[in-house]
Amino acid sequence: MSKRCYYETLEVERTVDESGLKSAFRKLAMKWHPDKNPGDKSSEIRFKEINEAYEVLKDGQKRAAYDRFGHAAFEQGGMGGGQGFGAGFASSFSDIFEDLFGMAGQRGRGSGGRERGADLRYNMEITLEEAFEGKAAEIHIPVSVTCEGCSGTGAKAGTKPKACATCGGAGRVRHAQGFFTLERTCHACHGRGQVIEDPCAACAGSGRVSRDRTLSVNIPPGVEDGTRIRLAGEGEAGLRGGPAGDLYIFLSLAAHELFQRDGADLYCRVPISMITAALGGEFEVPTIEAGRSKVKVPAGTQSGRRFRIAGKGMPVLRSRQTGDMYVQVVVETPQNLTKKQRELLAEFDKLSSGETQPESAGFFAKVKDFFGPRAAAS
Image (cartoon, rainbow, N blue to C red; front, side, top):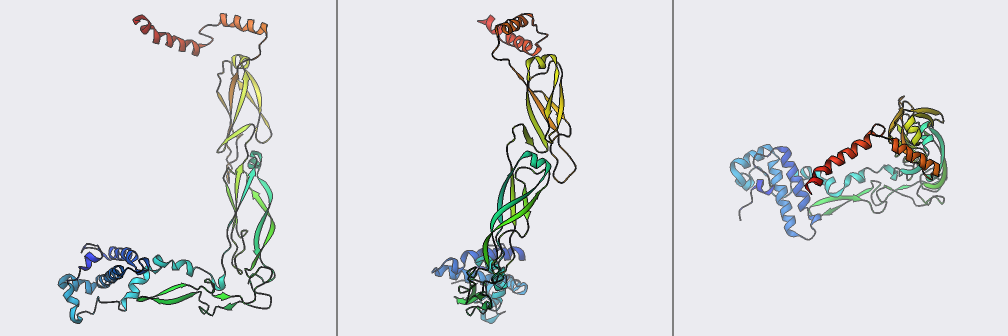
């Protein structure tokens, strides 16, 4: 039976470069690896064919010979190449070990089982005034800290952890599987490389205990909803003396009864009387720093008009800039009128003309023009 073309085996063109060849090999090796297809003999055969093809084509001289003479270049001892799994197999396959078995994560464990502690999250709600001024606050959180009884080693005072007898302190064990050797996390010490024969009674061998801690937090002026503050090293203590994680404080702003915030700008909605809107006037509004500002309303102001008060918004975080405050007036329609008030408004309505209410007069003029031709047609 004739052998399959090496290029077809790796599913590449004859013009493929070294990078493309390696990429194709990695993809196919992961797909057909026997560990991913347990009990499938055809997968093992396919995997051997892939490795054989790559061993030849990755070598410049062997590839040149193969391109010229085909499989005959390696028959009867001719360049010694492509059969089985020679010394070159380990080097060609080592670069996909981590992809297949996740070995990088196992190697990342510190010596002696020292593991970094987990990061923690704390949610804090603050007022808009506190976001404007900044705040020094204290928080109380339950957290894992280094055990004082064993100084974080996990072993009883006066004793020390010992090297794992199963892995010799490496944290990994090797065993043969098929035609190569696999390296896995040691089941006896769970990759720590050490075992504790006499654990600390206070922490049960973990090297940390739970405590309530009080921490000081400085909230700078200008923080927004969702701002995250990081306190380095204030998370959970690491296992067996490992470094502590971080604490992340997530801020949320409580709803305010007067102001709405949009970035560094503040918005305030103020109802005014129909008389003030018509004749003009002024009113005072509170500002976020507990001050007051006057707003002058010109005669004929319409509902929804905004007035800008410069520099009375929120500070911009970590800068000297400040936003503005916008006051939106809403003309309030009178309610619960007396008989006399109704009579006066009716008299005013009789005296009104298009000049006093131009928008209303203009709109209904357009309505009349709109329905005029239709009314004539009907």
